[in-house]
Amino acid sequence: MTTATRDARFWDRTARKYATDPIADMAGYERSRERTRELLSATNQVLEIGCGTGTTALSLAPSVARIVATDVSSEMIAIAREKAAAAGCGNVDFQVAPAEAAPGHPGGFDAVLAFNVLHLLPDRAAVLAHIREALKPGGILVSKTTCLSEMNPLIRLAVPVARLVGKAPHVAFFTGAELEADIARAGFRITERARHGSGKKDPRIFIVATAP
Ligand SMILES: C[S@@+](CC[C@H](N)C(=O)[O-])C[C@H]1O[C@@H](n2cnc3c(N)ncnc32)[C@H](O)[C@@H]1O
Image (tube, protein in one colour):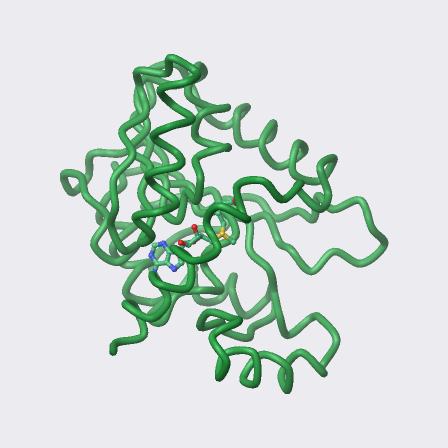
């Protein structure tokens, strides 16, 4: 079984629980979402990768023209579609797709959103290259990412064990500075970096990067 298939199954299994679990730091989540909303405009065509159950896409939908929201997990997308139907939301197109093959015409998007997903990708460089191709010149990547190398080092031991018993997906370890370097290597200019968490030490970096 490939890493992608194994991960899709992991996220399929956890989707219903993920949908009902409360957001751990709601104030931090809202700061990131509202900053993202400020960066978008009513005419924007937006792509989201790793959209999960669609909470953020559905919340941002009234502020943009259209969102293509994608996720590798068909269960996550099924829940997102249920939520879109219940909300009567007509401008979000939820699709099952791995981030490295997210749909859309090259150069067709004003913004790509990647929330809580860049650390889960088996090939981050390939996905960043794909995102750059998907964006119009001057388009933006808006991301929020857990930097596991900034957390308790014991997590390096815990993750492989959890993964062995199917309790964790693939994860990559990097710091915020390392992620910024990866994004810059893919040809982007970092235009904003922030930590929106409510706690003293927030391992999640919010990065806005502009395509050339
Ligand atoms: C931690 S959840 C985040 C969901 C949502 N973005 C949020 O912030 O609540 C990670 C999501 O990324 C998706 N995912 C994991 N690996 C992926 C990949 N290679 N391509 C696309 N989506 C992926 C999972 O299915 C899951 O829905």
